[in-house]
Each structure stands twice: as C-alpha cells, then as structure tokens.
Amino acid sequence: MSVIQIQNLTKDYGQSRGIFNISFTIEKGETVGFLGPNGAGKTTTLRHLLGFIRPDHGTVQIQGLDCFEHAAAITRKVGYLPGEISLINELTALDFITFMARLKGIQDLRLAHELMEYFDLQADGKILRMSKGTKQKIGLVVAMMQDPEILILDEPTSGLDPLMQNRFIELIRKKKQEGTTILLSSHMFEEVERTCDRAIIIRSGRIAAMEEMQKLRQNRPKTYIIDFGCEQDAASFQKNHAKAIKEGRQVSLSISGSPQELIQELSGLFIEDLSVQPQSLEELFMHFYGEHDHE
Amino acid sequence: MNKTLFLKEWKTNWKLLILFMAVLTLYAGIIIMMFDPKLGESLNLMAESMPQLFAAFGMMHVGSTLVEFIANYLYGFLLIAFPVVLILLLGHRLLTRYIDSGSMAWLLSAGISRKKILMTQLFFFLFTILLLNGYLTGLILLLSEFFFPDELDLICYFRLAAGLLALHGFLAALCFFCVCCFADTRFADGAGAALIIASLLLQMLSQVGDQFEFLRYLTLLTLFDPQKLLSDPAGALWGPLILLFTAGGLSSMAVHLFVKKDLSL
Image (cartoon, rainbow over all chains, first blue to last red; front, side, top):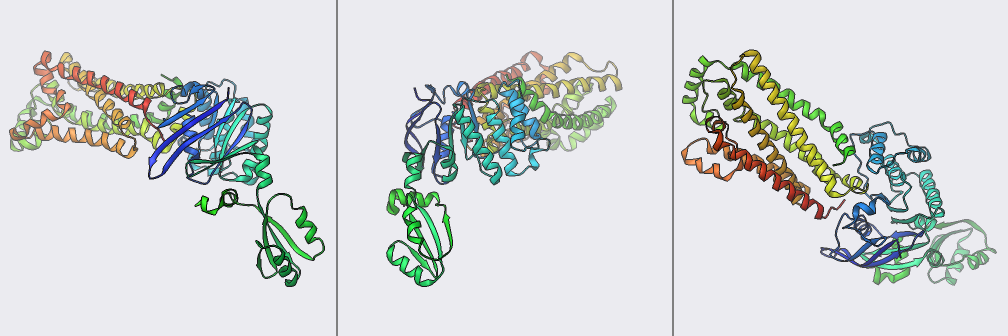
C-alpha cells in the first residue's frame, strides 16, 4: 500500500483557481519533490494531505486513512512545515518549540535540541523580533523533532541562507537513508534535484509531469555562456548552432544532456570565460512542454 | 480538553484579564461608595430630569436598598458593556487570530483533533469569564460589606451575579459561533462584534421610551433583566436559563461547524 495516495483530487475556487484532477502516489521511503511555480496549487494539495480542507472531488489518503476524517491520527505520524511560517509571536522560540513538543506528546526533547544546534538556532528571543530565516529554522525543528515517519514540507528552504539550505539538504538525505517518506514542495529545481528520487510537476492546478529525477536531470537543458577571445570565433560558433544567441564576443547556448561535444568543439578555441546558467522552472516547463502549452 | 494548549492560553491572556479586573474594580469601588439611601432621592430627581438618558443606560430605578442600587448602576450597563470588550478580544485571540495568521496550522498538525482544540479554546473562554464573574461577585460583596455592613440582600445579589454569568456565557458562545460560521476571518470577527454591539444598542434604545420598547424583543440581552431578577425571581430566572441553554446550543453548533470547516492555513 502506498503511504500517500491522491486520486482525482479537485478543489475548484472558481476562475480557474484551484487544483484539478490531481492523482499521484508516494511509496514508503520515497523522497518526492512537488515542483511548480508560485500559485500552481502545491500548497492547496498539501493542505488536503493535512486535512485542513476537504476535496470537492476525489480522495486523499495517508496510510489508507482519509486525510480529512482522520486528520488527528494522520498528523501524529506526519512532520509538517507550512508554506507560510506564522508562529505564535508572543512566545520565545524555545517556548514555542517546547509548547509544540508537549502538544505532540514528545517527552524527550533531545532531538529538538540537536536540531536547534544543527540549524544554529538561538532560541531564547521573542519570535516577533525574529527574521524570516530564523522562523523557518524554528518551523523545521518543530516539523522534525518527533522523528516522524512521514515528512511533508512546503517550501522548506524559503528564507534560509545558502549554508542553512545545504544543511537542510544534508538532513533530508539522512532522513531518506533512514527510510522516512518525504514530500517536499518547491519552486526551485535545484533543491528538488539534490534531494529527491522523483519529481511531480504541477502547473495551473494540474499535474504536468511525473518523472524520475535521473531522467529530468538528463533531459534538462542548461544554458552555457561562452566568452570567446575574438568576435570571429564567436560568429563562426554561432553559425554552427542555430539556437545560439550572440552578443558581441559572448554566445549563449542551451543544450540538454552531456556537454561532452560542446567541450570538444571549444577545445581548439581561445575561451576567456565559460559559465553555466541554471535554468528556471519556467524555462524548464517551456523545454518539456513547449511554449504554447506553457501559456 | 488539551492541558498544554489551555496553559499556553493562560500564559498569553492572563494580563488581559487582570487589566479588565483592575478597571472594573475601580468602577465598582466608586459606584458602591456612592451608595447612600438619602442620595437615592436626589438621584431619582436627576433621573426624572433626564429620563431617556438614564433609561438608556438601564439606570432608571435607583432604588432605596443597596442591592437595587448595585443592580441599577453596575448590572444595568457597566458590567455588561465592559466585559463585552473582553469577550470580543478573547474571541479574536483564542480563535480568529490563529486562523487569520495561519498559526492554527501548527495546532492542527500536532495530532490533536479539531474538536479537542475548539473545546479547549471554548473551555478557556468560559473559564476566563467565570474567573471574571467570580472576582466581580466577591469584590462587590466585600466592598458592600466593608462600606455598608449587613446592607446587602445576599440572596438577591447572588441571583443577579448568576444572571450576569449566564449572559456573559451566552455572549462568549455567540462570539465563537460567529467565528466558526464564516470562512473569511474579517467577517468572522466583524459579525460577532456587530451582533453583540447591535444587541447592546437595541437594548439601550428599547429602554428609552414606549415607542421603542418593541426593540427589546429583537435582542436576547433582554433575557437578563436585573430589576426583574430582584422583583420577580421565579419568573426572571427563566431568562438566564434560556441564555444558558442558547449558549450550549451555539457552542455545540460552533464545534460542529469548526470540525467541518475548510481552513486555508
């Protein structure tokens, strides 16, 4: 039996807002990225999994239990991080973490303290005066402190600095090795690429694709920006590549798969600089589904 | 009920309760000290010169006994209007604020049922109202005994206090019910406040003169009638009983609505 099972889920808010006919399953121990631009329907789908809202149509189940009807039983097994971090401002971080631990029935706070240390969280100040990143760390500690068997994280690295983003990714990899089932939503491909086995891509409330990460990675185009030593080389390179865009001595070229051929081609030329530009999720959609479909 | 949530609410709301207790202590103290059976005659004269104003605030019948004086000057308006502000603030802090800010997501994701969360908040609400009423009852009793020993008719006074408790309980339940009724929290807070304030205004208007008396039938606040609780105890007790019964019904409906409600957190 799948740990998470969503079938034909529809929540229609009118004017084409909402989610429509969403279906996917997540198996035990899988780490799945839920990718989509802002407003695509990621959070609405996750809210169904936590039992915050009821589907108009379809079913949402975790471990075979209906998520709305058995929300309390389900949330005992799930560590959840909301997309909008709104904590209880009048408490200190430590008071909030302790309060949440007691609510969750956690007796031993060792893991919570380990997580606070791991994320360099100074927990003695009032939440009201804390930055977005610090609040995000508190949220992550609360979501993970009971060592849940399922983790549902909505935009988990939002507001975190690069160092903390890396620490988070390391932690997710560790949890994955321990067999935790993880669903994390993001609008950043790199985050999902570094942590997940599989990606579910949602766009305008509908599932656009479900792919193994390996396949997405292989097919994902990358833009190489090449600064040639002279304009003549740049011009002749552009002639060989119809999709290349030339600006002075700089040429941009998007290709999928291995850059082996490109490197070979460039090996005989004088290159001043070569950089790889990560592709945005929008560009990824255009590559996979074509501009017309994207619109 | 969830003990952890209850204690958290106490930690974040006790100062508000103390503030209201302090303000009401001041008012109750001043008004009780003002009691003077001889003053009753001059107050009656004043009331006769401005009958509509005095009537609007439920202060038309000054009375010659201490309990009549308290019923008129404290239970007629002050002990209704001030606690209404506390009730509206608590309704917001205990429920609307959690939903509006999204922090309800943390409570709901902690493995506690919605029913238990709402019951805890409701229980805390009623507990706070009970504490306030208990304090006020004790305070007025002590002040009365201190300044005017053996003047207070205790049985009549406890009837008044019980009636006021029923009214406050009803208003708290109405406030919670309104929050649970509306999906949009702006309407949720607004509807509760509008209903309660409109009820107060209707009651004030209905007391002004005969032409507006019919308005008393449009508000359940009429069911708490301090003068009637003194003069016709058997008949007047039905009012608070109906208020309590309605409070129970509204609370049950609030729980039912909250359990089924979509919460976009």
